[in-house]
Length: 332
Ligand SMILES: CC(C)(COP(=O)(O)OP(=O)(O)OC[C@H]1O[C@@H](n2cnc3c(N)ncnc32)[C@H](O)[C@@H]1OP(=O)(O)O)[C@@H](O)C(=O)NCCC(=O)NCCS
Image (cartoon, rainbow, N blue to C red; front, side):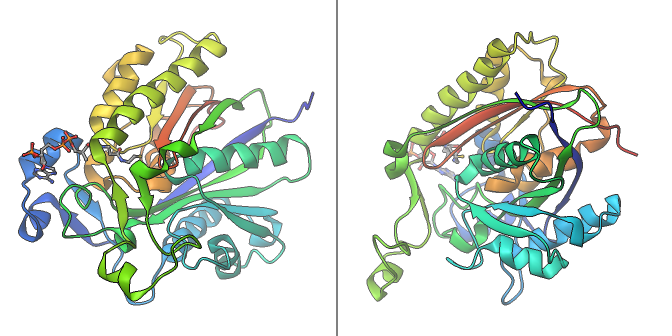
């Protein structure tokens, strides 16, 4: 058994300046603020504007924030993993681009595709590299430019998504705190309910795919909702049972921010009160890979060394999972 424990030792984030409110959206599609807020909990979301700016732009900003606040030399970074479903290009990886942008010349990097569970899958991977002793500094980024694959004529999806990036530094823990456990799951039979129909090798881009709007995110909302409610709640409860945690033990639930009603169901299943649930969906919507690191970033000052925190996510694929961490530092 490895004696090295991995810990998140710093966090940073970035959201674009442009704010798209529910009222703005109701000028484009047949919707309204009251419907969106009551069904999803979202008030506004951010959209990355600017010709030629992709997911790497936001990821770079998040990583620069991380390096600035920690004073870490980019040359000391071993590995960068970017969890995203909206990479700048099919290849090379966004992680490669980000490493170049921030001067992490000694790092290698790759992207990880697990939709809204991507950050958890990537964080678990980073933890394993640290625990086996191979690396000392791994950056995990969750970043998505969802506006690039959102159909702003489809009111059932365009209200949900936004752009953003969050980044964490993962290092060997210096005490008993750190990443304790994870339960990660996927089920490819769920793909028809939430996917991007074209642009991959199965259905390459053509005039027909563009005309049919097949490069946008496709979702059967109510089916996804049912799977998400059950699976995210179950996996969060499962990690508590596995680690013999009661609701009193848990300091915070940091859930993927897809729909406030899915978050509420998860908290109820865990038995934790609203005051322990960290939520910022009202300001950013669903930023896919970025929701959990953005939430940790927003609430960083609340988190105290030793706090027992449950992360939980559900996403396209289907993918889902939970992680149990003991927070490793008090923010300055
Ligand atoms: C998309 C979602 C918010 C829709 O909420 P819902 O309560 O399931 O709503 P429904 O799809 O059943 O639609 C109910 C009605 O509202 C209408 N509606 C849908 N979107 C609307 C909008 N933006 N504004 C106003 N009305 C809307 C529908 O047309 C439907 O009308 P009808 O009853 O006349 O047919 C919800 O299904 C959801 O959050 N799904 C999961 C999304 C998710 O988590 N995705 C990412 C996974 S990580």
